[in-house]
Image 1 (tube, rainbow, N blue to C red):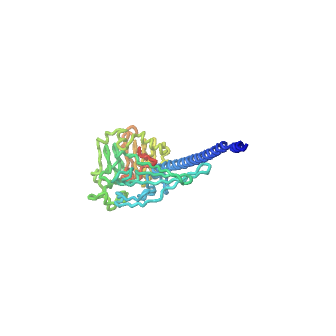
Image 2 (spheres, rainbow, N blue to C red; image 1 turned 180 degrees about the horizontal axis):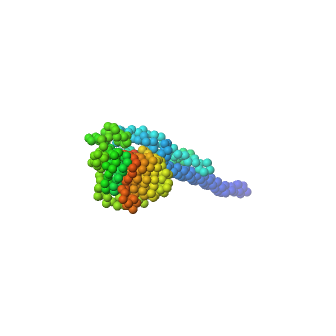
Image 3 (tube, one colour; image 1 turned 30 degrees about the vertical axis):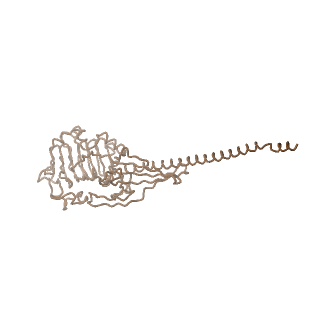
Length: 435
């Protein structure tokens, strides 16, 4: 009887052991599941933060490219490139920069500046992310060749985006440049005309950069006006002897202007190229393409991208504009200011132009038909007149007028402009990075 009772007291031991093993297993599974959930939650949170940072960086990079392409500066002028305040240093420079500036014959030293800060808020106001944008146009970077003089027309844009809590960040960068709107063949004269120049009013042409003022495929009738004259810089001097302000001075009674080279008494001087058969042979599109990198359609599309294609009746809408402006049809300009020293304009008149009042143009004025100057037309840059025979009145020269015409040549209003022509930005293919 005693041995039987001992045996009964051991019943349930296996069940207890099994339950204990199951309990331990369940505990381990619970801990493992919790750890998995925590890791997955952390991964999801990290991915969400990184998505925020990527979105912010991408938006900031788009802002940087748009800034380079041209925005309104503090003076109310649309300016492109890296230097919108025209202090010869990039606005949001990531690293110090030093370079030689040929326009002032001085060395420019630029200190690094704070990046441009951007804030993005969700539509419901519950999410706020941030980003920064910096520029770098120094040589030796992956965007500017070593030894190349830095300019405001090309360089690196770097955008850094941050998540709402600032824990995640992403960097994106892009090399940008500009389309050479003149294809390396901008005018080198104050006036270019495929056919004759028959101005009879009070006009002057000044070119202190090169040694020609007028280039024509036919006659240039300087003697037709008692008040007409052309000027160069004094013999024996160089461009580097003068400041840009002196080279572009519209006055003639100073030490940096020669005596008249061509006038009624002297006739056409060495600064006037007349009856050039090579120029006269460039008909229609060939003449146009001699000065621009693209054809008429390309240039009109550039103007269209800026919403600057106007019918002839609305030329006044171009007042104050910069970049490419296309005027369709015979037009009249009565006063106004077009372009600026920081942001030149390219005005293309697809017809004849009647100029009155006192219009002031900084850049290039291209006329497909005839230029009739009835007022005082001031151009800092160059004037090119195609003289399409289908548009010019029969028996008349492509360039006529009894008014005043003051043409002062400046390459800085053309292809030597410190800033890009508004609307000509191009992203360098293969240069985008997100690391």
